[in-house]
Length: 385
Picture 1: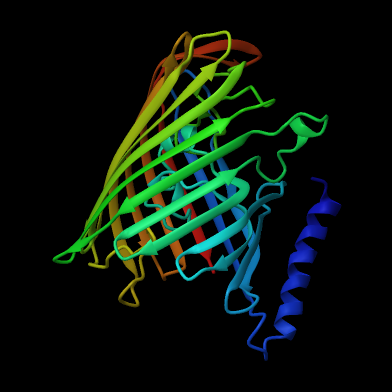
Picture 2: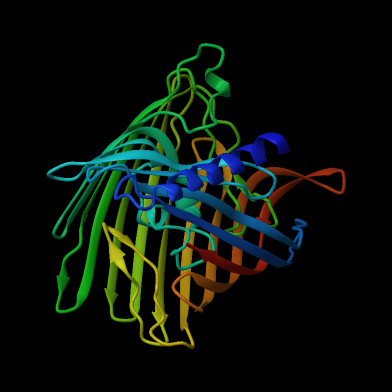
């Protein structure tokens, strides 16, 4: 998007805010600005592949949310990070006697790690299995209900906002259906989270898919595992299993995700991965939890809150003739919460890539990744409102 369109979009969002602000004396419509800024820096102890040390404006979102009347609410939010503009949540929601219906662009209901807000995830990036397999935001219609310990989400969806190039010539977009069910009782102050999700997508005319991932760090912008384009894909079937536990300042989660690609003329690959992680808030605060997802940490004292964490993740993109590679990461993290809305993070990532057939250009030469073991020091400063 060029600069004129970019700044026009920003002006439109700001203008919408001013219109609602002018009506602040009335109960409806109500208006509340929202946004976030995540700035990263990464430094690499390289192996054979050259990965650049860089700063990155990871997210720069601005938007509005509010209510149109007691039953209808909305969100409009766009991301302006790093010279690009993309839609985040853009939807309208209708409250029902039981649950609510949402129409627009929002997250496909799959995966605990994916559905936890980027403001609240324990590590700077989500685990590789989540990033590589789970769909993020799509246009569609969904229903959700939260009743006691039960949390249910379902969604029928198509493409994402901005992904219309492949349908501009008359081709049909892909169509999917997903659902997630979570049972999360609290027993003697302990939270037990058990969940599962499934997503089926008919690729229709969009019969090329691709699965790839960075080493859980964005600034270097290098993908060491990548299936390349998987052609003649008829459909995909994804499923996930998730467990989590929380008691006071301690929390842990484990998640398995898998995708099977049904192809017309070739073998059908199944790609999968998992992660396990744990964290402990040294200053005693507890992580929030609502609607089947973890929330953030609010410091109990003026000096802020400190958290330590560790994660192991695995993603395997080798199957049925594909040589996308296998990546195993160990991440150690320290987080400082200055306030509920300001956080500073540090991750040290031990990356172990094996059997990757990915081709990269380095010093004007083509190289195969093969086996690779970089180390990454990754930092973030973030705020949200």
